[in-house]
Structure formats: structure tokens, C-alpha cells
Amino acid sequence: MDTLKVRDARDVEEVVRTAIASEQPLEIIGHGTKRQIGHPMATNAVLDLSALNAVSAYEPNELIITVQAGAPLADVQSLIDSKNQHFAFEPMDTSVLLGAAGNGTIGGMIGAGLAGPRRIKAGGARDHLLGAHAVSGFGDSFKTGGRVVKNVTGYDLCKLLAGSWGTLAVMTEVTLKVMPKPESERTLMLSGLDDVTANRAMTAALGSPYDVSGAAHLPGSVFGSATGALKRLGAAGRALTLLRLEGIAASVADRAGSLGNALAAFGAVEMLQDDASSSIWAEVRDVEPFAASGARGLWPVWRIVCPPASGGALGQALARGSQGDVIYDWGGGLIWAAVPPQPDALAGPVRREVEAAGGHATLIRAPEEIRRNVEVFHPQAGGLAALGQRVRHSFDPKIILNRGRMLLMTAT
Image (cartoon, rainbow, N blue to C red; front, side, top):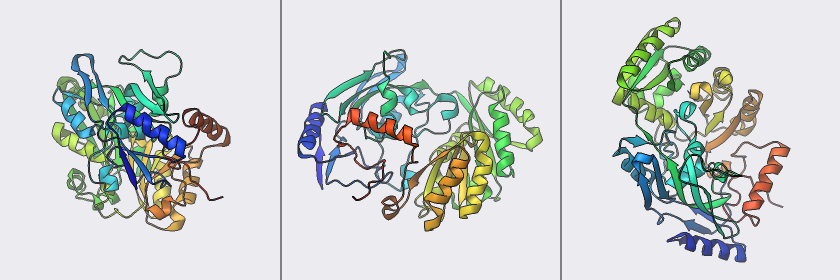
């Protein structure tokens, strides 16, 4: 396989134009940690952006950072952490779930658009992307957005690039909003709730005036495959419902007491503070109980987004139907489902249950032979699919960029 390592945006333009002329599709990678997500691509040419790794500008007082797309996410997070700042949407580290070596990049973070538990309060990756430089499938550079929040006139192309999995354009540089890290955090824990009751408890907490920034539920069965802080919490095999509060220390303490009283009907409340709390939420964010190195490491894993009110019942149905395990995040609006590797437990039954609940499902982890034969991303309805196709062709008419990653290519 030919690996084309570029040095700047001009190199990217030349590579894309050459690929168009030779009708050779390109696989776009940074460090390749997310290559297992999506359908395998039929190409022998890789466009490697890892050398585009510079921080172009960082203005902590203005809460913005501009960085090249190949910059390692961990390095950028370390830099902004030194100024007591962070990406408020909590980007997921997929290496835990996929077992990929190395560290993901900023471009991969935006291309995947996978946000963590704080999404219910802070929004997703797309909401923190202020601007981008990219190269389209025509081989032309373009700029979208800018370096301030209110910078959009006409189409907000940043929103299209986030979550496009590299199928619209090759991002070379992005400008992101950063936020101050909270001074303090506490996690309230309820134990022993079934999935539906936990769903009601999370809904009550999120509907309260106490500004909850994380709401997750872990059934007792998932702790057998956990290895970190969650393993220690779930030692008794009990289900845990987690509710996070963040902010100024005095405010967090006051809100935690009030929320605990409001949830008294659901059982006794335990408390975790600061480092102990943040460790737990990092493992929830990265779906650590389903880690590739753990007991569920060979099981396919689905990422399911649904109306939060439907989450508890849907998760229970999926776990019963597949004999698998589920984890709930976003107050029940995000379900991670690990299912045993049985052919009939894959696309059909899972998607039928999810669609009946008004949601959609993405197959995040599965062996290559499965990803070659099963739709990884949830199939869209006819009108929406046609609109997506028109958008794709307006950016990349030859389908040069990441051809086949998001759509199952069938032989003709």
C-alpha cells in the first residue's frame, strides 16, 4: 500500500488532484487509531496527515486554539490543561474500545465527532469547532468559519465536516473553542436500580435545577469485565447510577446535597469527589468495561442514540435479545451495547429494536469480515440519503476521499 505523507496543505492539494486524475481513491488517516470504524475501503493509497502536527496559535485568554489536523489529541489536551482549560465536550479515546496502538489526532476527533458524557450540557464536537481549513475532493483548499464564536454568514460548513469521517474534505487545520476546567466535581451514586428505574432517576436529575453534567447507568453485569476504577466500585456486583455535578466548590457541595435529597426516593446516595469522580467518568467516556483487552474484547459493540425516555426499556430489550451487556450514558440517550459474536445478533435484530424506539445505531467495533457485509452506519431514509449524496457530490464528485467508509459497497 502506498502511503503519501504530506507536509502542508499544498501537498494535500497535489495528492488529491493526482488521485482525481488517476481515479485512485484515498484513505485519509492521522495516526490510524479509528481505522477499524466503518467499512474496509478498497484502495491501495493512504494520505497520511501525521506530519501536520503543529499548534498554530493558542490564546488562553480568548478561549481558542488553532491546531493542525495531525496533532496528537493527548499533546493538545496536555497543553490546554497546563492553562487549566479543556475541551468541554470530553472527546472519547477510542483506543480503549478498539485496542488501537498510538494516540488519536485532532482531525480524527473532529471527523468522528464522538463526544463524552458532558455532551448533555456542553454539546458535541461540532458545537466547539469554530473554523477549519480543508481540501475538497476537487483538490481545492477552502476555509470555513473563523476564530470567534459568531462568525458564520451563509452555510456553516464546520457542522458538515464534524462527524463526516473524512468523506467530504481533508481537514488540514482547525480552530476550536476551549473552556476553563471546573474547580470541583462530585458524583452522586445510586446503587441497585434496574435499568428502567435508573432511567427515571437520571431523567429526574437532569430535569432538576442542579445543573447535572453527567448521567450514566451501569448494570451489575458489566462490572465483571471492568478493570479500573469502575471495577472497584462494582465489586459487590451491584448496578450503579452515576450523576455528576461540576463548578465552584461551594456551589457543587450545595447542589450535591440538594440533589441527593431530591433523589431520596430512589435510594441511599453515596458520593465521590474530584479525582475519584473524574477517574470514573473517564472510564464511562471510553466505555472501559467493553475494552478490547477485557473479557468482552471480542464482542461487537454498538453505539446507539435514542430518545432518553426510551433508553431503559430499549437497553433491557437489547440485553435480553442478544444475551449481551449495555451501558447507558447521556441520561439514557446513548447506549453502548456489547453483543456476543453471533451472526443473527448483529444488524437485523439490533436495528429493528432501535428503530422501534426512534433511535439509530452504529457498529463501532466488529471484525473486518462482519464490516464487509453489514451496514456499519445506520441506513438513512430515502429522502435523507439522497440529500446526503448530493452534499457528498458537491464536495467530492469522484468519491476520492474515504470511498466506501460510510456506505456498504456492493459488487455490480
